[in-house]
Image (tube, rainbow, N blue to C red; front, side, top):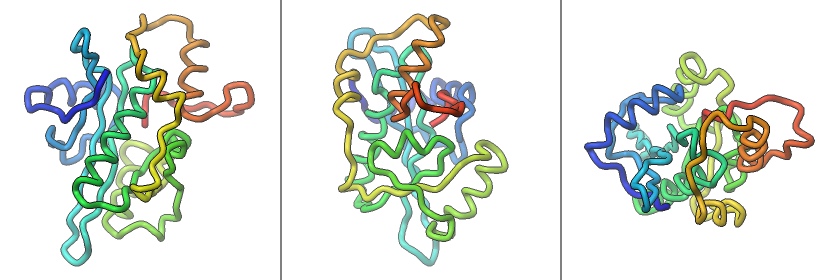
Length: 199
């Protein structure tokens, strides 16, 4: 399993999966995405995007968005490695901070992202958060990561090395517990529901 930049020919696959998972396709450009690929079967397992905002009167802003994992590959560290590749891309572009507007902050929190107050967001992202809450993710909260503070949990790195597609529609309990662990949630003590299809 590895993660690489998306190719133009993968645009239809990306759009189909973004729609199926109810993710954000605003200002879609396939070149902004990365894709996780199984090197044995060449099967696509997950994807994500960095979106660069260019305000007229302020420095450029980097947003991490539209992270999705195909159902058969969930709970195996695929999303984590998509995030890692996106952070590397942001760093290569010269960004020291990356923002995200997400409904499940625990997932990104395990990599060093921190929830911030809406007032701490750049103006461009404040408007975007409002739109995202109205159209896609009503519970979205703003997060930020200092790129140099990114951390990959060892358990997710190990899981990714041995990732294999699973039969979908199997044991719901096993899949849920596996996703909970990937999101940094203890399934034994959690007292709330979470949507494992959105990141």
